[in-house]
Amino acid sequence: MESSSPSSLIPGLTDDVAELCLSRIPRCDFRIISQVCRRWRTFLKSKHFSAVRKLTGPVEEFMCVLMKSKSPEDGSRWVEYLYGEVFDASGNNLGQIPSVPGPLKSQFGVAVLGGGKIVLVGGYAEVEGFPIDGTTRISASADAYEFDPATNSWRKLAGMNVPRREFAFAVVGGLLYVIRGFSSDGECLQSSEVYDPETNQWSLMDDCPDRPDFHRAFAFSFKSKLFVVGNESRFIDIYDPRTETWEELDSGQSLSVYSYTVVRNKVYFFDHNSDYNKPELGVFDPEENSWSSMSVPRSPGASWCKVGNGTIRLYWFHRSGAYLNS
Image (cartoon, rainbow, N blue to C red; front, side, top):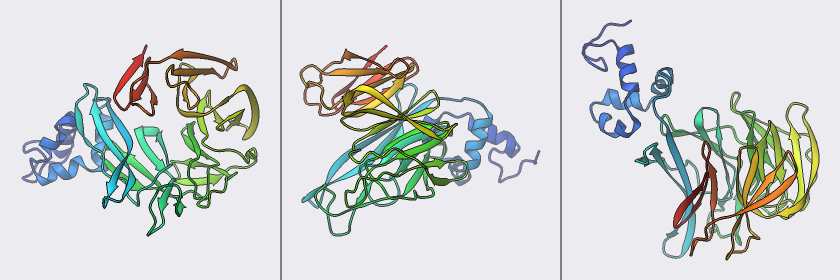
């Protein structure tokens, strides 16, 4: 153990002991203690602090909320942006997530990998001189960025092999899969690739089923397999990473899903085709290949919903409020 000195984190304590003490401080107090001195501020923002905090065991839980919104620019057009905030287990706002590096994008994928790190990948950005509005020139992106809640910072990862937007994506076995999507010129891509966070490398996948009409798709992980569903399609492509093979499941019902989650071995989703005056939450059981539904509260003025899952509860969020079902 090193001896304390005038430059120690906490006078009278060795730095390794002082680091353990600081690692126990709740995240909600970071703003205050970072003002004590420059060395504390530097330590709190370092990767070393994150490593020390992990050694102390679970100190607290917090939630990162990412929201995609639009704002006017120069009073003539609207641009999309990603906005994020962090909350603790008591619902206290701990501050904003820093802006994502790089140009503004839309139709990107967001996933959570091991260690609670958030990865944002792909999407499209405007071509200089043209707005992002879906009818003008756009450029699909291969960029990938990782947000570490422990250090409240982003870092750029290796880019995908193929720039793509509006693709399906899911995490299976700690790996991030991106499936098909669209190119800059609107061509439907048939390629898929997988990202390994341990090596920071992307690899193209072989023998991905050909779906020329594949668009607005979603994917999910179930029992260590990847399930991919195309918009308005009744067929589900299932990939087994252990055998590196695909199979096809006829679900018997076409979907137009825009939000979903997996809870207790069932897939819950919102369907674009759902009656606005009588909204329902669709439920798919992959094991039984069966369907059911449940009613959800209707929120006047809400134009979209988002599904998320907790330990034993299912949440859905409206722009004007939130609901949960135990």
